[in-house]
Length: 254
Image (cartoon, rainbow, N blue to C red):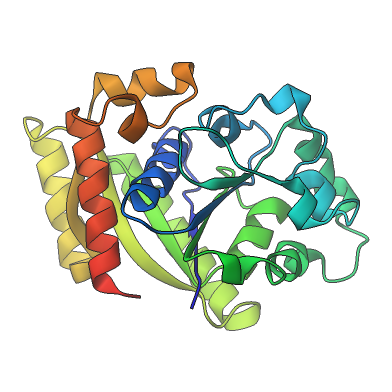
């Protein structure tokens, strides 16, 4: 059965896109068939996969509005190992255009139904806000992966996201649940980060994965080369940490 997970956090700058592209590349490296869906108008996951977002004839925008089939819009970037449904600035207009369409919250879910059996994992990179786009992602998914920094304000944002997931589970998507919390940009030398990490374990138990993603220069450099860190420098600490995360996710067998 295909596993469809959103990578989401209503707080920006938490390594959401970095997590999406590196998790997708790591699982591809481990022999899984992976589709990455970029649902953010900034198109960072698209660029980070080595695809020029400005020159695409078909994107997720066209799929959501029914202008193109999902089969026609999916591309296979070289080197990364996974398939991509790309995004660019056109997607910002979808917010308004989706409002009057039938099944507006389920447009992505309906499109995905046509191809999802071709993949073992589908990862959806959501915008850092609860928009119609994020709603489409969450209504398509069975679970949510939440990357977060171990900082005080991150806990407040996490509370909002958990409430959103509960509400969607109750009203729009009864399959939706939290798959895991991933600690990112982690620095063991900072006492506050250790304290927040312990709070997360206390409240969420085994939802907090053992894998921890450290702050890593090579992960930060990789997008400028159009590659996930796991491909750009497989020997880096960040790449090894994401590979460990992918292996842990596989072992859980959700």
